[in-house]
Length: 162
View 1 (cartoon, rainbow, N blue to C red):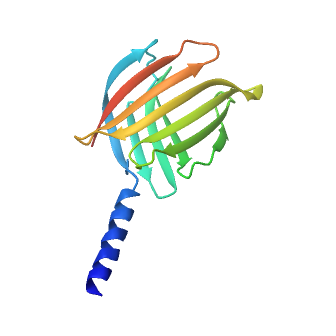
View 2 (tube, rainbow, N blue to C red; view 1 turned 90 degrees about the vertical axis):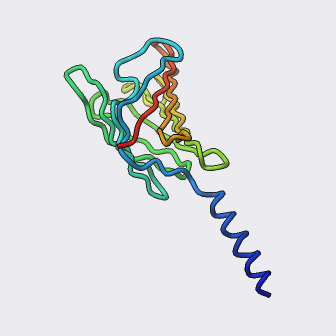
View 3 (cartoon, rainbow, N blue to C red; view 1 turned 135 degrees about the horizontal axis):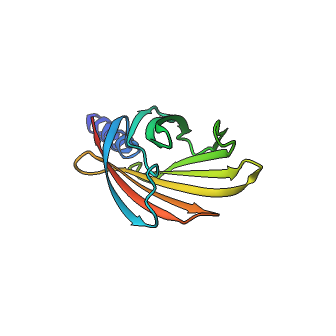
């Protein structure tokens, strides 16, 4: 009887541990950038990202280069695979975001579609971000932009926590 209880308990612990998702919470800054392809834009990746992760969502407070100095943006992304939608205050674009986990819960892919302000059903460009924690605890983001009217590009940023 005790062996059965121990076996069931061990099985539950292993199952729960294998279904755990990586927690990206923290403040990540000073990215080491590697341009993989295309033109390097100064605002392609944030200088700093503050991540607050819960079971259901990821809140991102990012600081990026802007035309007149740094710009802070706050976005909340659902972690259940459902698409969220918002209208950009500055450009009027419709922005639709979806986040999905790999089977092991170690890699998060964030897909963001930006639509023309005057045609919200036509994608102007799409950004794909792949998030992972490295063995040394750094955040690696590989971001690809596939644009309708400009050059496509891919950049990798390695962020340090703290």
